[in-house]
Amino acid sequence: PALPAAVVPPHLRDAPPGSVVESAPAGVAVVDALARRLAVQGGAMLIIDYGYEGPALGETLQAVRAHAFTNPFDAPGSVDLSAHVDFAVLGAAAARAGAIVYGPVAQRDFLGQLGLAARAAKLASCSPDAADAVAVAHHRLTDPGAMGVLFRAMALTGNGWPMPAGFA
Image 1 (cartoon, one colour):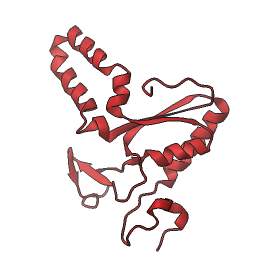
Image 2 (cartoon, rainbow, N blue to C red; image 1 turned 45 degrees about the vertical axis):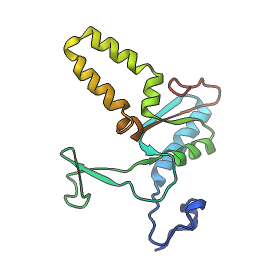
Image 3 (cartoon, helix red, strand yellow; image 1 turned 60 degrees about the horizontal axis):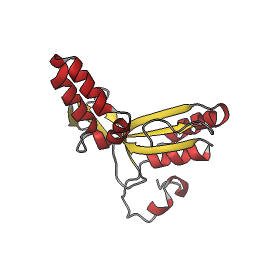
């Protein structure tokens, strides 16, 4: 059946028939509830996940088994399923609920602002046996072709709270 128009973002409503539009109403409901608490009680929340700044057409559902992509329907219950987060939708829900929204920013930028390079260098210098592992981990977390841009970070705070580190 056709989706209700309210579920499809306005700029995607004229998409060609058969287009895929992902929607995550449970995620929006969770962010809405937590953002309302932040607006009333204060505090901060950090969201880090695979994601994009949408909304966009297409599907992001994927399955991984034994560190390799696989068909999500091949072995139900025995694969890890995930879908990318639409940070624009979550940020808009949080703002409507009264929270202050920072980001999203790419993981490499977030970790860079938190001083990851200096921390990795210090760790490697203190433990030469771990230097190669530290270098691999640093590269994996910040590589623009992998986790460095596939993951995004977004922070929510109550009014009057300082800007969270990593979002300057």
